[in-house]
Image (tube, rainbow, N blue to C red; front, top):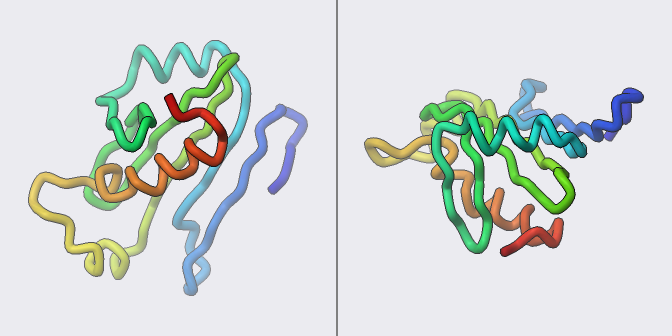
Amino acid sequence: MDDDGTGIQQCNYEDAGGHDVLNVKLFKNSTGAANFRAIHLRILKSEGADIYVMKDEPNECGVGLLGPEDNIAQFEFEPGDAAVAAAALPAGQTWCDFSAPVIAEANKKLGWTK
C-alpha cells in the first residue's frame, strides 16, 4: 500500500500472470462522496452495505463504499478472461453482482455496516 501525498491509500492486486485485477483505494473526500451519491449507475445492497456502482460490466466493476465523515473505499475489478469464464455469470449478472459479498465483507471490516 502506498501513499502518494494525496491522502489516498492504494493497493493493487495481480493475478498469476502479473495483470492488475483489483485496485483498492481508501480516502476521505467530501466532493468524491457527493459524486458517488449523485452519479452512480445503481446501488447494490448486500449484508448491510450500500454499494455505489459506477462501472457495471460482465468483466469489469467499479464501486464505492461510503463511510462516516466522507470516507470512501473504492474498488476497481478487472478480472481476466479465465476468471470471467470460471465465474460463469448468469445472463444479466455483472461482475459487480458477483463481487457484492466480498465488497460487503470489506464494509464490515471497515465498521461501516448499517
